[in-house]
Length: 355
Image (cartoon, rainbow, N blue to C red; front, side, top):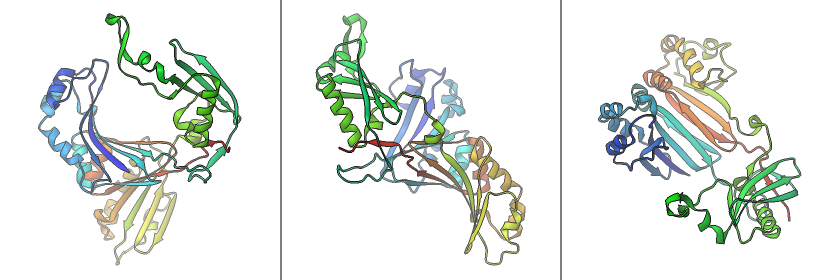
């Protein structure tokens, strides 16, 4: 797993030139909005929060940043986990959340799972769905050496991708300069694109079959037919509270939270309460519930440091979580540690062929 953190600024109507000068960055083209600043790379989730450093640096720059036309709501901190394991645990301490909340900066977390590993002739670690190819349609593009390929599978799904020949690459590079006779230069980028020697049916079918056999088809092709997003993309959200109970607890905790949780369990000194949130941000309803019981918990001998909140997300392909400044501030002031648990569950998404 690799971890990246950075500060992100959405430019909006602010001066690109002034922001570039403030942060020592190249000036963005007028049609681009996002500045990525102070990016750091790690091999694992850092033990010491890098976000405190971002907040300290912004403390010295806020006046100039705001005078350039950027509000605090346009600034966010990011943590991205790439090639993540099936379970990813991210812990946020109260001080980090307090500082981010005070500065009005939201925290964004993205988790991208590792690509499926597969050795031909061996079972993949993912759940597989055997399919057959019904049809492959090759539609020539506007320029030579490019075509749109549509693949119809026997499970009813339809997929598309851009195919290019090796010889045509230079002709399709961007940007096109109208003042230089339309001569292309620079780079080639298109989503869901592949290279083949020729655009005949034999070469295209060989590529499609190879991708399906190696369990990489859905990474190379885009799905075109309507399908149920909720069945494969929407995360399953749950917020839980863990309380480390003191030895001389004066009242069972389940009586305190009776009727306010979907599940309560007691294991040794740990009391766990699970809650399925209904608010737009999952943490809000749990924090509201705790606000009503902090006094009673303190009277029972439970300290704030004995409480840990866990925001759990079950997802399929990618997870994106946003924690708003208001929740970060409430968590920071409460002294509660927050854990974000991202757990990938594959739902029959890897289509393959058996040769």
